[in-house]
Picture (cartoon, rainbow, N blue to C red):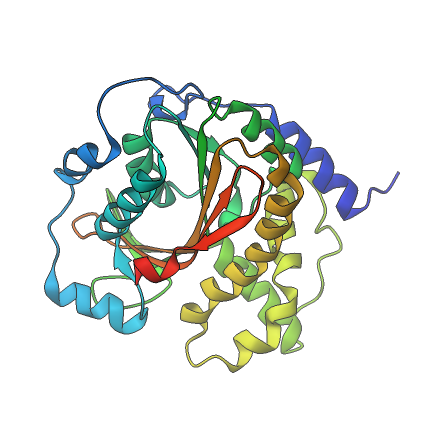
Length: 304
């Protein structure tokens, strides 16, 4: 029996939505919100105390390649201060993320976990929200009563100390590695189709590599855009973000009736760097929805 892509997607999303993994070294993946008296703003200094100091020269390099990017430290500071004004606290907030499976994508996720204390994982390869509507529904049920949800989503890209985009230095590995590997593989697949040197993969829907197959299908509409880009690796995460934004918007709009007190949706591009430099984020969306599911404020200007 041949299953359609949509049928497979629904089946995988349903399975992922109700399986909460907890690796032994990742206590932050628990799904309980621990009460405490410390405010989110008070935690910021502790979270970034062990992070590298800002390197002005490298900071200019990142911002030259990604205008609008800010360091994770600056991002967290601004986001937490804005949400604190709306009543978000570590006691009443559930973090939900849709970022890539790559361990480098955990950096941003863990920083916000250290602030808010918990996370529900909605994402998979390249940052696509493969948990879907079913996962969103499960996540919404875990938000504290009369509480809030902060959702962070987006693809990621690496940049080396020398400014090479699509590569990154990794801890303990001499090889300067691809980042994001899933995105680059999908880009290469698409390039082969658009320039006529590749064939469409007839096994793209196979269960053993379902997510990568989905990424390759979801990036297909951006073939010409990437082909015409001045720097394909720099344009790639933005093309992926535009594809993901359609999915995220549909999921949020479908499930916004389950919002409790409020929902903040932060979307953008994660920019991963070497272990001894700060990571960055280019915010492209920061919306606040009230308990009725109505969009009441675009907070993105406060992050620029």
